[in-house]
Image (tube, rainbow, N blue to C red; front, side, top):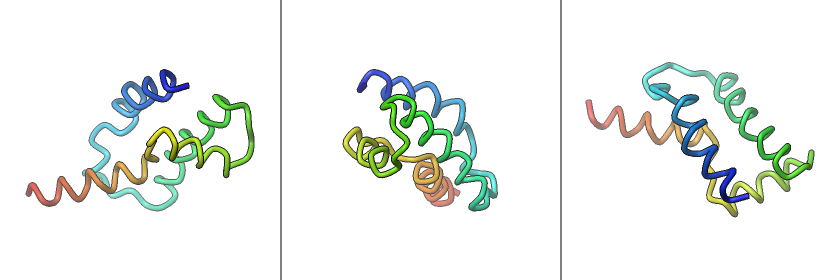
Length: 80
């Protein structure tokens, strides 16, 4: 399970989040990105319970795209 989450973190996040910190994303856009990761965890752990998914994400220290984009946006704005 750690291997799958590590692969997702490395590969998927690189392509999915490339330069999104400079874009003006609304809440719906961020929710759509989070949905992809939540569905990945649902399929990985064969569950449909979002509480289990959130617990697994926290145990694996796996941040949702909305959190990562927010962190990157702050870092980008500080660098200007």
